[in-house]
Length: 85
View: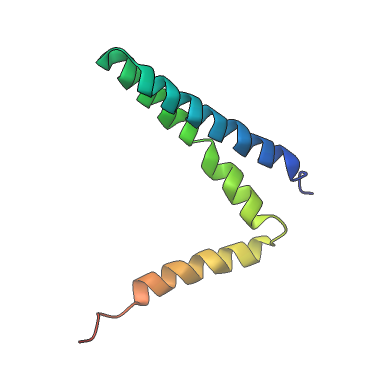
């Protein structure tokens, strides 16, 4: 059973909104300490974007298909021969 798509879109909108707020706060930060705190919050908010994007991309794909895609990409990277002149 898969969850509906809209909450993941809402998660993305919220995460990108949080990133925008962090960028605005960083631009207005009066001290270096506040800037470092804003960068830390920005990094945490950024962690919420990847799972939502991955869920949207992989929605409806069977687990075997996802594994085959991932293994195929890894195998292609490993088996890539040296560049020929």
